[in-house]
Image (cartoon, rainbow, N blue to C red; front, side, top):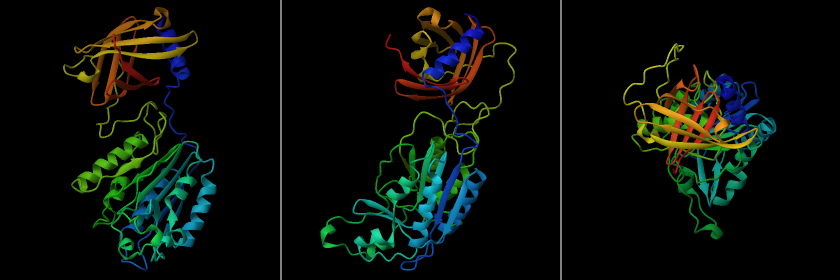
Length: 387
């Protein structure tokens, strides 16, 4: 089998195995609803939410979203805005809802609070506030991603003055928002994890909004990694007093809010130093000492579907920066050897024997006995061999 046949077969196998990483369509429909409530009428005002919402709305527009912005929204304005947003979100590639202001858990349900809410009793929430569940429902029918971002976990003055009905007297209102379990392709990001409160901040933006604005337009960063960067920025800014949290589980498909990587292959690692563009290879590159992540040393295998059925591909990664590859059955893929590097979430490979002038590169993650390896042809899930 020559090099062309090997690469062609690998691409087909990756596609059949469902391993190809496909970025979100750049020209897909994107819609967003952004709400910033600060001028509350029954409790002290919040200074930052209108600023946060305006700045986030501008960033989303630059990312190609059609944005509806509501500032200091009443219950009726928020309700009507959410209904219209849901209609626009149906069938969109991405739909994002952002809310800054007061939010709270009441008897197990989470509520986003309009500026005209009074909430004298816990039972008033259904008639004066917007349920988080209804927001999640509006973004659930998208093709790629439904995203809800809540900077709504501030220490809440409504809870202190609210009386509880006799039927729910034992169920207190908690600080912040309660834990949720989104389903489907929905992610929900809290400025502070469930049961804790977030800071409004002393500057123009809250610590969470400031971190989000620094990261949301970064190109080449997959959405889940983007929120990891936001988390680290907020914890650093608040000296670990506030920990953002993301709820939901997505498929292996890479999703980008900004532009995907130039090679359209893999998400960047959170906090990883961007890799410089590699020069054209005229010969095998040198493998610097110590460039093999110790966690990758050993034998790994992956099952790959092909036109003749499944085959088992085995990679041996040595501590000296060399590798050996073979497949079972033997004829399912060309055996080869060469040099490899694994360090700081990035890897490179150059074949020296078995394949001529073949090189590859990408990113990697390690999860116990599994390694997620992404390169030119997609994403593969290696498992440590028991042999």
